[in-house]
Length: 168
Picture 1 (cartoon, rainbow, N blue to C red):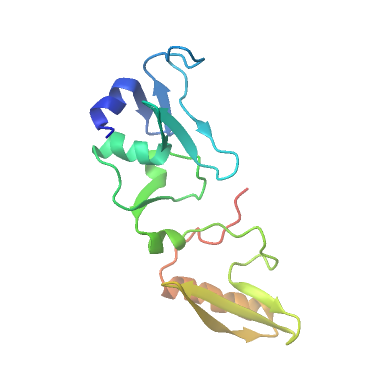
Picture 2: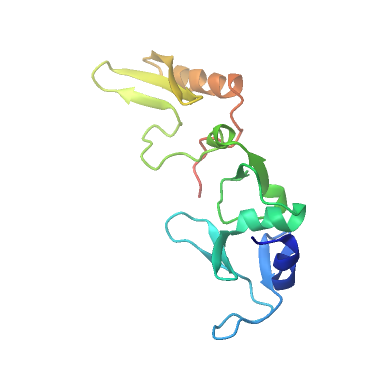
């Protein structure tokens, strides 16, 4: 199992940028001392780093580097940028809490998470999922009212202020 000591033998971690810097060159590769380590995965957006033949997510390595342990739960990227591993952008949470800070889904058509138009009933509906259960918050012919229902529920159920924002 990877330890903080081994990690610090191989890499430096810049907590302000979130970058891991190689302290040694890797034989047989183009990885040189001083290079930024790892790569950003094309589909999921996370930064990965190979350590002793095993791939790790950089945010989990940052936790090990700073606190001498791997996180017990999940790591939430507060700004929702999965490749931003600045120390101040990371927080340890359980899965339910991590779900409260998701970016807006690409399939969203209203521009507000949890608000959608029902063509058949000609009304805007608001909903929220809490503890894996969907709650219907109500409906309105007015888009603004449906948005207010959802925003009130975000506050009531302690959703993160960044929840539902569209990443640039």
